[in-house]
Image (cartoon, rainbow, N blue to C red):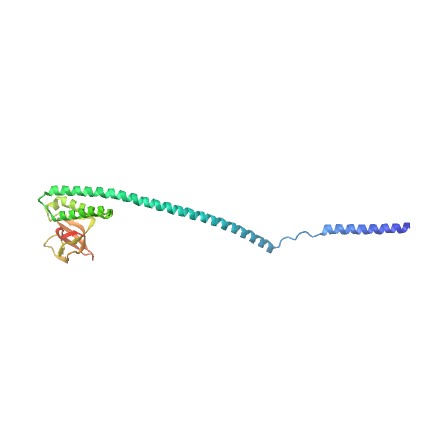
Length: 241
């Protein structure tokens, strides 16, 4: 019996030893988690980038919506400012033109006083017509047109105030208008090569033919027709359009 017991103990010890070795071996050689493959790493990076892109697009959408609101507000503010500026310019223009008209009217009174009540010259009537038309345009709130007509009338008045123009000397030098004066013919008239009644005739302009006065010399105006021809016409044969 002791031998049998001893053998049994030996067998049990062997079994426990083998079991311990097996357990120890399993613990030592148990494989860990496998490292991700390049494909898995790439997929993971793609997912991360897609999420980042989605976040950025959301932020961009939010910023665009905010920007659109700001643009709308800016447009409304700009429109209000533009309307205010137009209104301000209108009042400024109205005041400026009113002052200009007053100055030209005074100049016309000075001219009439200089010429005398008994003396009337053709271009004086033309200047008066331009001034009257300017006043009528001003009353209709056409301030730009009124300013142009006043400038045209003022040029004729200044011309008539010149000693050479008042005396009617043909030797008076040609003077350019600062502002072209739109006119038309009262009657069929000769357009001459020079400001003299004996100068050659370039063309016969029909009644109501539109021309633009560019310069003057004495009682003559150098005019340009719609087709570009230029020549001299007596001022008394012209009137405002």
